[in-house]
Image 1 (spheres, rainbow, N blue to C red):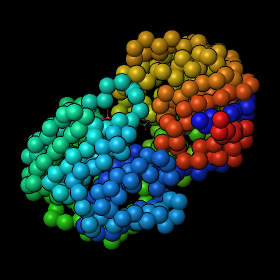
Image 2 (tube, rainbow, N blue to C red; image 1 turned 90 degrees about the vertical axis):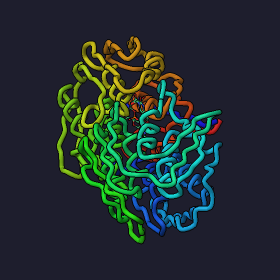
Image 3 (cartoon, rainbow, N blue to C red; image 1 turned 30 degrees about the vertical axis):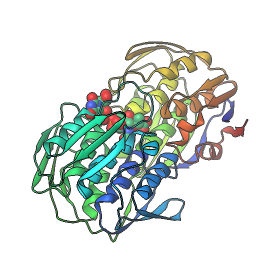
Length: 419
Ligand code: EPZ
């Protein structure tokens, strides 16, 4: 078992380089299945969810070459099976993208029910509804999903819920369908635009990604033979922005798209932090105890649920009582119990949590319940007095590349220790 041992407090200072977006990469990799050719993907984050996506592609017959730690070439000319390995697909959430991509490419697929972070109920009814409207038959039984639809036909699909996964998945299934598909009430996250840009680079005809209506004109074939660079990770950038505030530090966060960070910038300014926006990098610093705030997580461009725990750390030390309303996931406050072990005073009731700000947190052994909870606990350990041990690192390694090295370079006293 591994743990991170953090000795605080440290005021983080210096420059940090943001990696490619996990949630774009784990969709772009399955999207390569739609290509009858070879493509190269740059700025791939070297994280365990990406490695798992690659293993699934390889099990389906794709050939993957790592050219550098952050660049791969994928050859999907020879797909040999329509059965994705159940042990791999049931390990993480994004394996559901294999369904949309393989329906498009092969007209058939069997996968395990997607796993992933335990954030409460994670239904996929909107994905299935979309596939069925395009003409596929979908059966879910005994932990498996079986989808078949040899000749998908473009259609109009209204999403009952704004869903990142369903929007991308239906987009994947409709790229090679006959005719035009319109996805209404689509999600607008930057990674949706990125997947559409990737597919368009390979020959697809997708318009409107980034708005709530996406139009996909089906094409006969995607050719590949192109190189694509994954968008910078908005959530990783936001994690370091909030780490700068929580530690009363001063960070220059490089290789990000600051337009994607507006909701976080606005909240940091509201609580008394400082932000300087340079377009592709952003400086964040904070010299005083932050003010209280009220936050509601929302789909993009609202405040992202994936930064809620990191913001929770900041508010746990703010002056006054803050409220966070988590509107996306039903159980994303598990980290608050861990912060309370460090001296925070947080009461979580269902989807709402009250943060009675304390002047200081104190080091303690804590357990990360999911990816972003893990990032939040690292930030808490850096800001806290004394030694914090963070356990369950497998969650953190799923989505953050070289996290302790990046924090160490900006001054954190953090070590990964094997027990
Ligand atoms: C994506 O999950 C991200 N994961 C999550 O990131 C992120 O928290 C979430 O979007 C919201 O931004 C990936 O991209 C791999 P949704 P996804 O479908 O697509 C409900 C992280 O830490 N819903 O947008 O699974 C659902 O229950 C992770 O990086 C349905 O009811 O999320 C939720 O309440 C964790 N039916 C809401 O919609 C459906 O068919 C939004 O979920 C689909 C979703």
